[in-house]
Amino acid sequence: MNLKFHLLLRITLVAIFCLLSTTSYVLYQADRQAKQEAQALLDSVTKQLHMQLLRIDAGFGQANKFPDLSLWQETSHVSGVCLRFIAADNDFTRSICRGAEWPKTQRPRIFEIVYQWLFNPGLEIKRELSFKGRGQGTISLIPSAEKELAGAWENLRVLLTLSAFTILAVCLLVYLSISQALRPAQVIVTGLKKMQDGDLTVRLPDFKLLQWQQTAIAINDLASNQQQLLNEHKQLAYKLITLQDEERRYLARELHDELGQCLAATNALATSIIQTAEQECPVLVDEAKNISRINTHIMQTVRNLLLKLRPAEIDELGLEASLNSLLSDWNTRTGSKTHYHLIIKGDCAQLTEPLPMTLFRLIQEGITNIAKHAHASSATIELTISNDRVTLTISDNGSAELPFKPNSGMGLLGMRERVSALDGQLTLENNKSGGLNLHITIPLQKH
Image (tube, rainbow, N blue to C red; front, side, top):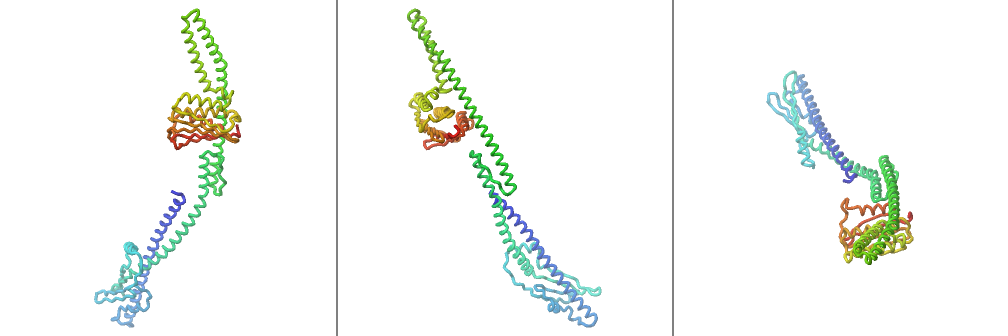
């Protein structure tokens, strides 16, 4: 869930809880006020009747007019109540109402049901009237339930209206405030995505809020450390690759100069033995020919080993001739199964070490992967050399599924290491024919 809406929802729930609590308090106060008014009115009527009894006892009043409730009706301004007096011996009953028929107001039915269930409005209250220790009767007061409901609903309606506007205003202000406060979060997410894509030069700005400042500082420090580690890793990989190529060059030179000459001499000696044996000792001819075949096999093995270590064409003829020789060898080896096509745009002679050897190894590994896994009938290797970068694209029409399974092989990992060591980028994607496009870009400013 969006953080802004999450916080806004929580604030709204808290506001609704507060509103319900306030509503309960308002309704409770309305009921309490109505009961206090009824008690006060009953006290007032009781005092008036007590004064009437004092006047009658003093001889200033007429007993047959007791209780005279009309006096209360004339002096009281309270409406919506009914009074009733029941004599002690039940000889007579007198009652009077003032505004008993309270006009109904529009209000929800559910409110009436809940309020009546909670507070029971219009409940009759009674009080015994006595004079000089003798009971005179019972005074009953019946307040209007409709009046109490109308008063409670009016108070609640005012509260709900005010609360509704208050909640809307608070939610709007909170939403705007939260949106403003969380704006740095989008900047942080954007920066993290760029870092995830490999751009560790991105740095987050200095935010105003302390928490965002601390977050930005921590992320910037992490990015700086990662960039330093990545640069160190690239430098180490560059040195290792350079050292590896130097060792391979040394081994290839030693194999070519020392072992190659020995094998050539052995082959010449075997030829001489064959010629001599044919004239003087025919029994040794077959063994001499076996020596020649074994020597030829060793020479071919050494030649293949030299090709893997470091092709002599790179140093003697250059990268372009080495690539043409490599693809010609693969086309001869695979026959009609897979055809490899080479396209070179630009001057390979302008490339300096270790780029020629690196490009050769990348193309060699790419062709090997196609031969092993792609099941393709054709593959195209396109090498473009411009003033500031080298672009290599290897595509085939075979079958492949991305992403590859973990630990699927060391070939692609080695290619990534070589490209990364030269501050380049390697990407893989499926093409329309169902095969793969391997795209490599290496800058030239450092090489």
